[in-house]
Structure formats: structure tokens, C-alpha cells
Image 1 (tube, rainbow, N blue to C red):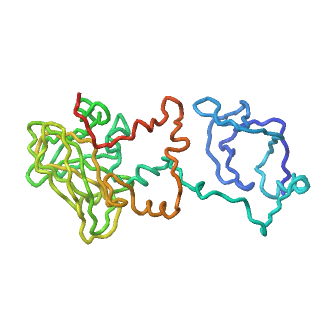
Image 2 (cartoon, rainbow, N blue to C red):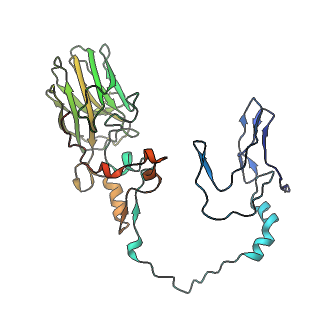
Image 3 (cartoon, helix red, strand yellow):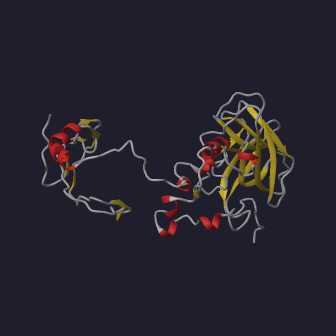
Length: 343
């Protein structure tokens, strides 16, 4: 075994073509990173805190003692060699398996919700449309794309000049259809969260807010189809779109199809003109068939825990990175489809 050497000074210095810092697991080098220029990290070593945005954060609430640095990563054998006798003489653990522990109230078993890694949108919430009010990115309509038949033409873009209202639905997706012949189409597609899941003999509820230019006569076709457009699993039509904002709803029902997820949601037309969309929604069956509801499979798992309380919202998502961008959840307890007129 290589004997670890305790260091009086810690400095990272790369003088060759490879940096080998932080790539050791159990004393074994896992990876090297090419680096052509010399680089020296000679700042202070921080113990008991992190750094975010150039500022110290996440301070340890406690005491830190006897910090040591070594010239190699310590595996179990090295730790035991260096500290084994001290640990054995100063530490002990007694487990009394024949005695009952303290009573714990059943009211203390519960759930905490924190929106991390799509635990809400794209997770427990059954909504299948991603970026449905077009605010994920102020510069581009993320997760939306233009759909055109060969020979047809059109454009899509974010638009804030024609809002459905001035409170929440301030951005829309503008579809301009410039060229389309009989039998062709131009439209918009949403990729969903890693695809739109399709299941056999399943009913989906689709809705959206839309407004059309005076030269657009409709209709619109709404459907769920494979990503290449070769297979349409379910479709319906809206006969006409008003020149003032309104909500439109259709029901989409699949047949005896194979379960798949490499699919998209499409709204298209076969006439020239301009249509704006916002708050586009697609729901599969939900828990207890509740509108705007939650996924039945995940809700059943949560129900099976027999939790006595739910903490919402929780943790870092509520705090935000700074006070200026914390989550004002009390201001979000509204029905999303209650859209007041534009003022």
C-alpha cells in the first residue's frame, strides 16, 4: 500500500497535458482531462461551506476540527492504517435489539413535495404538454416545432404583442401559414416530456386558447401522432377559430394501438392565415377522473403510504437561489383556465 503523506500546503498545479484532480475512486485513477495550458489554483481552501455566484453559501451549523490533507485519495485500508487504533479506542456502538424504542406518533409520517427533476411538471401533474404557456424561454418556443407537408410553408414565433390577458397568459405562439395546397398542412407540434405517451383505447382531453387573423377560415386538426408523422393515433377537428381569444376543447381517443412514447401533439391547418395559441393542454386519464388532475399510478403509490400530512411546497425550490427569485406559491393558488379579458 502507498503510504499517504500529510500535506502542509494544498495547491493544484497542472504542468503537463493532463489534470488528475478529483478523479480518484478508492485510490484508483478513473479519468484524466486534457489541458494544454498550465493552471494553478492557489486560493484559500474552504472547509464547511460552498460557493454560489462567487459568494460563500451553505455554512456548516456546527464545529469542524482536525482537518488534514493527503497527497492521494484515501481508501478504506489507508483510513484504517492511519486512524484505526484511535477510532477503535474512542468509538463504540451498542444496539439493544431486545428493547423497544420510543413511541413515534403516526401523525409524524407524511410526504414533502419539492419540484426537483420534474417531480411536478412532467411527473405527478398529469399534463402532457411541455411549455404550455410559452414562458420556458423568452427567446424561443422551447419544445415546440413547425410541422409542414412537402411543398407547404409557414413560420412559428413567440409573440407578446397579442396576449390572451395581461396577467398570466402574456405570451403566445404565432403560427403564420404562407403556402399550403389541397391535401397539405402546416402546424405546430409539442414534444411533451420525453415524448407524448400513447396507450391503447385511451381517452385524452385536449384544449387550447386561440385567436385567428381575419383571413384565416379554419378548420384546425388536433391530433396525437408518431414523431415522423407517419402514424396518427387519434385526431379531432375544430371547425373555426374566432378573431377574439377563446378556449377550444376536443376529445382524442386511441384505438387498439401499441403502447409507445415516441410521439408528438400536433395542431395543424390546411388554409393560409395566422393563428395564435397559448395554454395548450393535453391530459390523459387522471386520478379520480379529476380535471386538471394528477397521474393515477403515482397517486396510488402515494396513497399506499398512508401519509398523515403533506408539506407543500418544500425545501430549496421554495427558497429560490435569492430572495428576488423565490417561489411565491401563495400567488399561484388560482384556476389556470380562469382567463380574464385583456385590459
